[in-house]
Image (cartoon, rainbow, N blue to C red; front, top):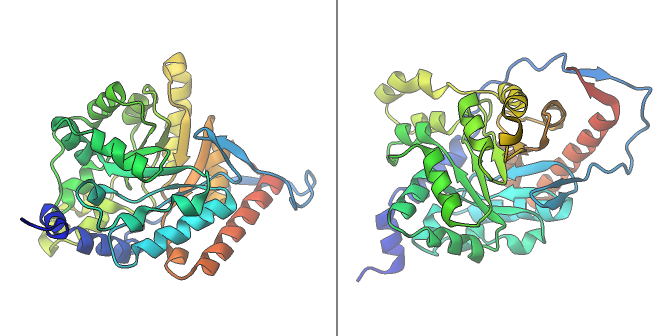
Length: 345
């Protein structure tokens, strides 16, 4: 009989190498941001320096000391454990929330459980596990969704992120086939589980129709994963051969920016009215710094925080003191923007 490690590798033999590729290629897969000038009025007369002014915000039924979400993107490689530990420590110290990278491996093996076991570093700050829509579909088809619930409980997570990534799966050499519309799969999850659910994209974002469908569901939040940040469909193309890249290069760059999606949400809040059951948003994708985050959070007409992945990963790869310094700077910058800048309508 195969031992557990061999069994896990047979189920997903490319997992460790693929996750290493994801870390190595994440920075290469950043989509160029749009021109971000002329977004603010600078108002030096209306506030003093924000020495101790709070930007605390209620989100996901908990308190954020600053409206920042750490969108982690890795697990199952030699140095993923240290990355996730550093990110979780920062969330605990500075009062932020965190989404783990894909926890797919933990459905089949505990070999890499320590990579994801970070609750002890976070205190009570929001922590969400993460599985792809293809894995959720498979669990439902096999009447095994309880495995996802057990995973969330074992990680002491607050709930589950379901990442929806049909374009990435199509372009990934080892990609899974998604049989059903993801909105139907998520509805099935809600019908049979009381677990808290966040739905996110992974680099293309959501069009207005997809956002409308999600906003009508009783989920905790919608994470944009907009075009402009790490594009996992494009990342998978870098792992393919030249012919595949030439064929699918254009479609891999399609998607919606965070600015577009904020506009969609604001329109839908008016159009859908009392049909809206989810009005919490994590604005991610192309958020390079506190100015981007501040602009998006103040532009959306709903409860929102902003998320970053690659900027945090860059410093988490070094050491914790480097990450601390980065986070402190972003928080101070956000508070300064909140004091001195008004967003142009």
